[in-house]
Every structure is written in structure tokens, then in C-alpha cells.
Image (cartoon, rainbow, N blue to C red; front, side):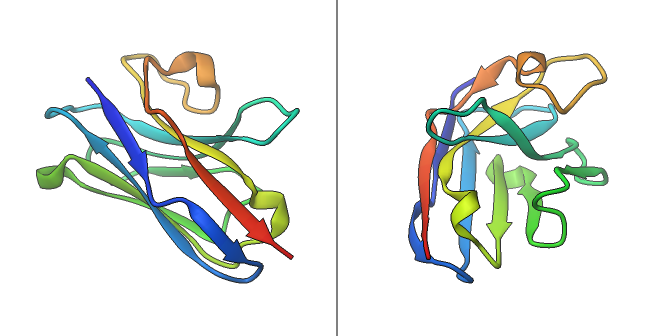
Length: 121
């Protein structure tokens, strides 16, 4: 499985971006988004089950970010609204194989290359 993250860019505080994570093949796995700011550890942002019926969010993004998926297109989206400078990071999408946890990066098997999001104040 290859994952391709895209949609990052430079946006002013209060603005919006939509990230996409396209999978190279058909998968049936939970997909998550993580982010890593300079000098910080990679942190969980959001995740969505294969069916799309269950979503998970970090407290820091709850109410501002929305994760969704379009399975016929093998694509997962992260709509990010009300962005602030603390959201600046490289954003990665990832898929996990088995297991019950969703919040830790070591629970995920496949990773995309990351897309930079920069929010100016």
C-alpha cells in the first residue's frame, strides 16, 4: 500500500485547508492523520474507520477538523477550519493493520510522505 498526502500549504490564521490521502490500492483499514512540528514528537490528529462510521479526534482539533473518506476513490480527507499557528506542522496520513488502538503512531503500519501546513499569524 502506498499513501500520498496532499493539500498542504500556507494559510492565514482563521483560514481553512483540506488535506487528501490517496491510497494506491483498495484497502479496508482504519486511516489516521498525524502531525509533527519542528522539535516535537509526532502527534495524533484524527482517524476514521474503514466504513467511515467511527471517527476519532485529538482534543486540540475537535470541533475544527473533520475527517471523512470516499472509499470508491480510496481517499481520506481532513478538512481543517479555524486554523491557528499552533497547527503548523507536517501532516502525515497512515493506515493501521489490526489492533484496537488508534492514537499512537507505532500502531500504524503504512505511512504517506507528509504534506506541510503552515499557518501565519
